[in-house]
Image (tube, rainbow, N blue to C red; front, side, top):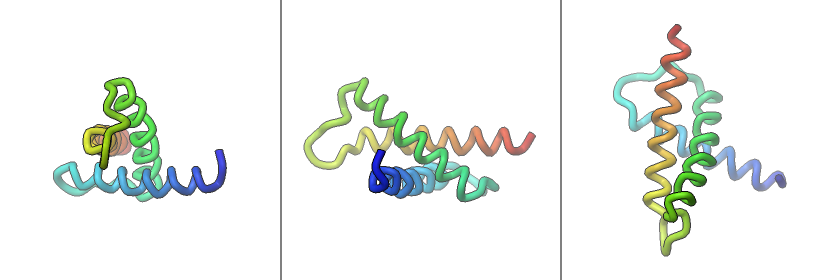
Length: 86
């Protein structure tokens, strides 16, 4: 992986993780780094799921893929929050 790919993954992971946090009700006490980590993981897994469903490559913006990624990020942030609370 090149440095540009790594930087892109961090930026996209930050956006996806933030959108995932915004999708959850209430206040989360998860830090910035776990949110970015969850976002990067959700972006990668969401892309794989979208490819498996055949909706990864569409004309224009891939809204279904983005919705899958944000949903996975919301689940991931909730999971991290729950595990952190124990």
